[in-house]
Length: 266
Image 1 (cartoon, one colour):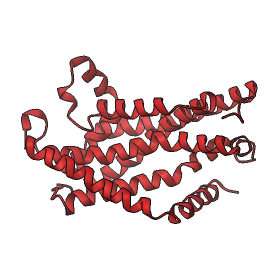
Image 2 (spheres, rainbow, N blue to C red):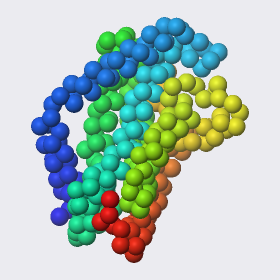
Image 3 (cartoon, rainbow, N blue to C red):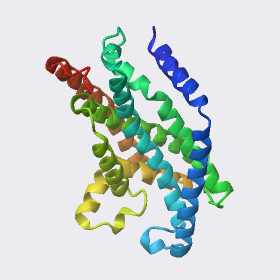
Image 4 (cartoon, one colour):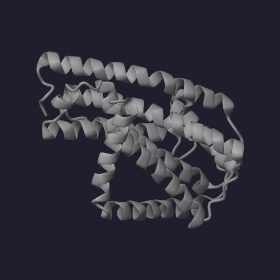
């Protein structure tokens, strides 16, 4: 079976399961509106503040950060949660023993979640524009740049998620690690506030993180109709290099669990 067919099979399976439980879709939509409303009214308190890196207002800044966090959470949580589910149901060892390479299996397992995260991020931006009056300043070129940035960001988060899944294979429970990573990366990437307000040591770290580059590219493209090509190139380069490294770590974790006889443990 080809890789594409394997991925499609996993997506169809997960879509069939999700479609049978429709209430979570409604609750997710309500949650988006409530979250945007919270930051919308906080934005009213702050107002436009060019001196603080908020020339378009805090809500415009935060709305893009919130969509970014959706990708971050899914990228980190989906892979490890899939591995954990397979461990608890006793199917993980069998799944890793099939003729399909483990690298393909782990990536295909979370494909549906990744697609859903992208759609969720787009829906959040549409809600911000239609309900809360967010004004975007973008053109065809900057939209293309943003699309490339989203794809590269998704790859980067997927690589990080596969790396965390590798720890799940070995250590079984990594919920606390995932939670810490989501909070820490959202903080350092500047999802909620400009990284310029951070202390110098933290700002130096944030400046070299590709996650902050992603948000810079997205905000430039959506709010200023400009393309930060330099940061986009850096983001794409890091994303392309991260997946092979993450898959090597995952395969090493599988070998370690097999040697210790804990692959089927949960």
